[in-house]
Image (tube, rainbow, N blue to C red; front, top):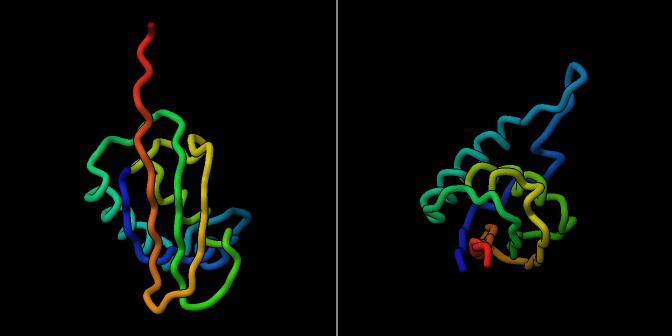
Length: 117
């Protein structure tokens, strides 16, 4: 199992804005995404898989909040790093905890290649 520890992603509301009829990424999200991708690439050390994948995610945060508010920014940031597109994610187990140290942990196993019999 591969485990990646990242800083806590910004919420969806702090990651994306609407302007001139389109969505765009905020500066806060761009900086977090760049850092998260660097950490994930150096930890994962594999090419993005093109197969279906299952994720286990733990959010450690100082306060409450919706459990799903950080998922989209996190899943989007892992595109091109762990998987090619987040539509390949077929299962997610998400947990959140109160903690003095805000962070996020992502765990997954690379799918095994299926060879024809």
